[in-house]
Amino acid sequence: MIRLGHIELAEPVIQAPLSGYSDWAMRRIARRFGAPLTFSGLMLDRSVLHPRAWRQGVYYLDADEAPIGGQLLGNDPETMARAARVMQEKGYDLIDINFACPAPKVIARRRGGYLLQQPALAGEIVRQVRGAVSLPVTLKLRSSFYQGDQEKEHFWRICEQAVAAGVEALIVHGRSVEQRYRDPADWRIIRQVKRRFADTLVFGSGDLHTAEDALERRQDSGADGVIIARGAIGNPWIFPELRALLAGSAKPPPPEPAQVGRIMEDHFDLVLRLHERRKVIAYFRKFCVGYCRRHPRRRRVLPILLAARTEDELREAIRKWFYQDSDTAADDT
Image (cartoon, rainbow, N blue to C red; front, side, top):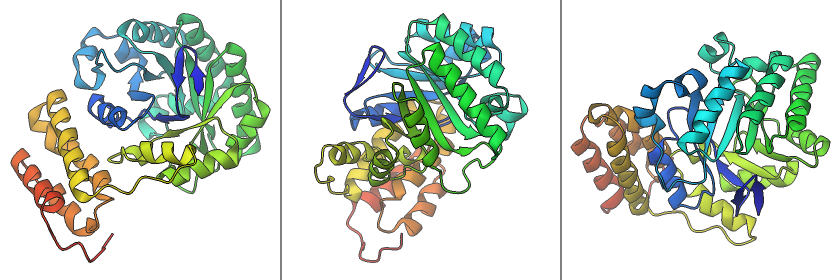
């Protein structure tokens, strides 16, 4: 059991905030499979303060989603604090501050991972957000901006300020901002953070594509928990699989294609309730990529799903390739 303020997690695993992915539909599927804490997508502080933003599907919260976390992006301490208060009022249970995003448009606006170069400003943001809300506050950051000794000094200073401000957890991604998602994530920095801040919860992030990955990285690093990002896209089975491994039990058998197909359709139905119908097919294609990873004929099936242009075409493809009997002897994954 892990406690983040008032939030109790039965397992030390979180579904990460994923911009463009972790909307209400994805969160609902993840919770069905046992994810103890889910996040909405990355939220810009100024957008949070705009009343019209809350009418958009990406901001939709359900009354029964608790606990639900929100990740906040910005570079002005006062604006970030005001946005955090609004998120608390709207029903969020936890605020995560993002000093990790490596997207070029975010860096160009001096937000996200850019703030690893500005430790004084970063520390003030954390202090003001922490003081603005009664919710638990966590901090997501990468190991540095560029790779180098001076960059590491900034990283450690920001961690020290965050712990002093009273954050409930540090969430560390084992890459620099410059690396983006190139090169394997380095979990040694996560081990170092946990050793240095033994009394603070530390969650590790990076390259957790399977339950086995998550278990091994957590054990090797000594992290208190893990945060599953890309590994959860179209793969909610990672949560019960990791739960079993953490309990010392055998991993459940992989889902049959028909089971995957049913969850795909359930997910698609939820997306239809959330987004404009004319945009749903294009939006859902990125989830098809994840769901197809478990199909024994992925290379043949995925292009067919991605070629669907209408709801009927997509459902027909799912039912043909996931439900109906087909020759699955040739594994072309």
